[in-house]
Image (tube, one colour):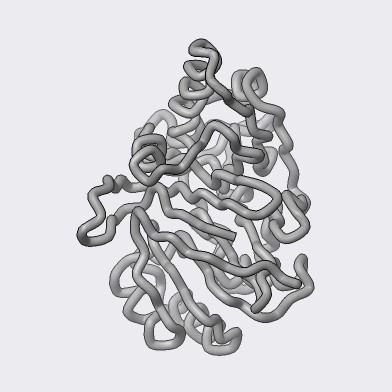
Length: 282
């Protein structure tokens, strides 16, 4: 599997790409090509073009959750598909995989919308929708983990904003938060969006679903932004136990949290243009 970071809050030195507060990751495996999240704008398209990555032949588009810094690129992506069709260029409409609540409206702190701007109905005109709370195999090695159980006591319990549901508005615990897990020859590679469910809850669920304890790498947002001391302590204790071979914490992971993580696991630099390769399981 080859993984390329198309959008992140940061870029690498001497890589003339562009960053924004958001996340988008391209995953190219032997069997499938997957785009995980779309960032905030059309930046993922611009960076992909600079990096020579073709987004016209995706098998799957996976949305980690509804928030604007992960889904507001959906409009530009639909325009991209539409314009290629108009020009008679080769284009494949990917299957969109996400939690069923990913299209729910969310508001917070006077902002009328921080959820996805494209409705479920409009998205369904351009792509087949596979909305599920349960794990789905995208390939023999790549799994969408569905809704993440929140089993520990120190993370995943803080709502952000108000979500509109069929039963009315409710505090949003971001139950739509999900991730991908890849089965490599050395163990699991876990690809996260924001980890609102809790990075430790996520890893535990990935291990259970995939039947694999070894963690090769965790790439993406850890949602450690000035976290409570109890959450940080619990997270550090957990990582000491699971001994990952590497961490590429980015996006919604602040500097102090990265420094703390580096004390318990091999923390690696991450930014737009990051390219990683993992061999598949035998």
